[in-house]
Image (cartoon, rainbow, N blue to C red; front, side):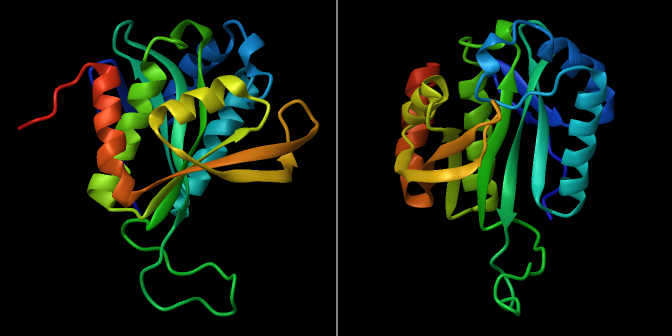
Length: 214
């Protein structure tokens, strides 16, 4: 399963999620919560502690790699995100069909999800660079075949940010899950394939003001 890793950029550092940042996450989630209508964000210390505990349990099973997002401008933890739904295609196919296969060293496909930010960090480039760091790890180190990113179909803010990455809309799955607002949610599915990563990377570099190495 993937090892703990810290990912550093110019604006953010993605640090392995741990109980050490529970109080920081409580503070981040306690800012203006009006933008969380379609996003499940823990509220209060008990919910944040349970959130971290569940994420670490999934990590121990090789199913997720969760991060705390540290905004270097303020040296504050301002949210969380993760590489999740990790699937491993190495080795023999599991039997019976649908059973969980063996966990390998690196995943073959993954999702990026459970991303949320404190209100003060939204619209600052923190989310964009966080996505860039995780995509770079997935495509350049793990060599995954696909990254999937999902959003409540009503969440135009998140969908606009996903589309700005250059992700492809695969479709909308109707009645996909229970929504954060306790309704039945339709979910928009986006993906980026390994062959598409160089163009996506160039696009992100341009948006972040970075210069490609010669």
